Length: 187
Length: 187
DNA sequence: TCGGAAGTGGAGACAGCCTCCGTTTCATCG
DNA sequence: CGATGAAACGGAGGCTGTCTCCACTTCCGA
Image (tube, rainbow over all chains, first blue to last red; front, side):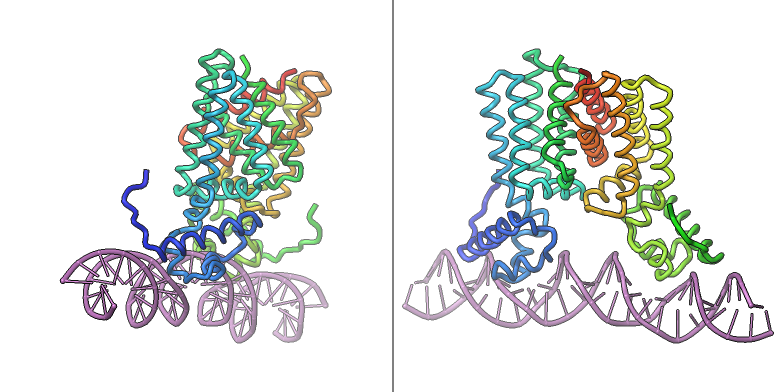
């Protein structure tokens, strides 16, 4: 996907330092409370360097979560290959909620960035959507799921789950949404 | 609800001017693209005056939408009084989507403010949630709806619909979500 | 009509974001 | 193993939007 990138040794080192610190900050849930410039200082590089590697906050978030989103998509593919169509979708949605539950950082990130209409995040976001679309399409073909409601609606519901990450009773409500969606999808 | 507020004549005039201009800007969908200070200039008052009346962007949004949210809640109450329990909930959710469709401004506002974790909006938001909770509770008592999924999940789904306001196929997907929720809720 | 309380408004302090460019580090080549 | 140009560094400073502060104006009750 990415072409021609003979990155110099020091450049690579700095990039990794930035990413490492960013991951740390993400896990602490402080990503959006921190001045962007401070990442640089925290990671021991200049602000110019930070901006060269990651032109925006979103770009940094994208880089941090790229692997994790990829893993999620991979999981979707595996589920699709091993489970009956209907169950694969259900399992994936449950897994998604589980993941968001243990990685609050991602939930908040996705919600904030999508809310901000970020384009940078488009790649990961689209990848996830593609995974869901595939799962739904397969389930429809297998006749396990109605065909008059698209995958977009499912995405929207997921979106809501992510966006509402700060509700006190998040986990229970998220499970409720998934239950409604799955039961609603059954023909 | 609000106590002791003998507002002076000129203060009231300015407040109204601000609100009028804010409504106009909202309807044009430019609320978040505009420097906050410029509201002042646009409405013909100083920035100090703006900040005295509405300390934050959110406060202004809250004021602008206070009436509309109240109207929505009123509609919920009326539906609840005139329709069978199950249908009232369905009608309200459909009406909600309709409303958001013709008032994109509100959708974006709610999404952005909730995404930002604003407390200012809490009142209107809570009022809406209360309306939904009542509708669901009534429907559950009437046996039209399952009792193992709370109103919170419905709220979350609505939240998602609002948060995803910028999806190209919004209307269809929003209707899809509502369909899933309603079918999922049926016992 | 007058006093002071309430309200006004806009200059400027402040906080993040980002750019620009002189300096440093790397890798290649004779 | 220098030398040389390209690549990368980094942080001072400019910019943009937010918000405060207070000298001035307007209102209203006595």
